[in-house]
Image (cartoon, rainbow, N blue to C red):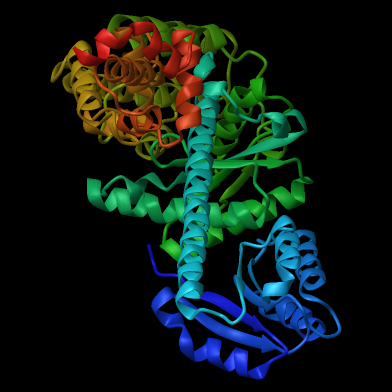
Length: 539
């Protein structure tokens, strides 16, 4: 801890006493400096207000305002301004002990009798410094704890929002102490997607550094515009939530983000803006609207900001859109079932022929399906070369329905083949076992689901799905149970204090650790240890 220099004010109507105090005490040795002096209570009051000393050494009898009244006024002024009170050391004569005792009753730190014994005063100064050091150390720890709790709360909130946007039932553990009121008023979601042509070729370390820079830029814009939340979602995507704004203001805000990333990070992005939503449960709808708004960047490449109300509603797909076929196609791709893909595309061709769809209508439907299916590939291991830009270009070149469907079929076949090859490299259960081993080695640290997914080299969303399917619970639930299990072992087999156990199992905030422990075990850590009995500790 950096050495603090404490400020001292000397107050006495006898100049010789002040001068002797200045030279007789090695102030710098005790980490103190004299910042002012006063000859009467009124001047001392002015000096105390201006200089904000940490220690005041004051005679108890002074002209204009006596020492006790001076002390009361200083303490009242500090309390009014919500500042820490200074430590008062009062000086009194042998015949004024009653005054000194009254000063102590009113909060004086200590007193010394005249004539002043400098050795005795130095001992009082030493005690004062210890008290001030203790106070500031506690303030530093409280600030660290506040920041830690804030970060934990933000991380938990981001994961809670992500689960809801994925359409999952949010984990009850995540909702502990999280304030969701801001989403009870009208809000909208802004989805930032990097240009895949740029971001697709980054190596792992470059990607980490780039994402760190993007995160900082977006958080700065978010803070300037009072965002409700900002956090990364899929790789290359960020989500920002804002209180509802007029459409023009939304577009301006989206443009500001595009400009900030292009100027400060030399990166291109597109911004999808959702419809207006109310309530935490509508996050998934908000996200889907923003995704649909972004579909139009493939038609309007010069545009960077797309608003759902203006873009998607104005160009809604035909009333005959084959939603049931889309679902069968998505299910077949998710399960890598090639015959199912062929059957769904055959049905799609028949329906488009029956409805006499125009080329433009067919192209829009096929492209819409490709976009929706392509997003499902993020539930699979990372698939290189499966881009929508190339697909759209090939689709544009075809002038028959049969040719356009063939383009979609070939693209889907390529995507599924790549996904099958990557999936066969390591089984799902094997990947999750690898993830569990990583958790076992790093649970003491602030690890997140993105970090573990990256370690096993699969996408975030596929990892979420695979983990729940294989482990029978979400990643966060597993991590929490694992940490609490380790905490129980420490409580049974050691005498380590509860607040120390919290940090040993990955919780920086002991109070939050106790909350989670009680939620899972039905009792506090201390009650658990007591229930185990002394024989468990000694074993």
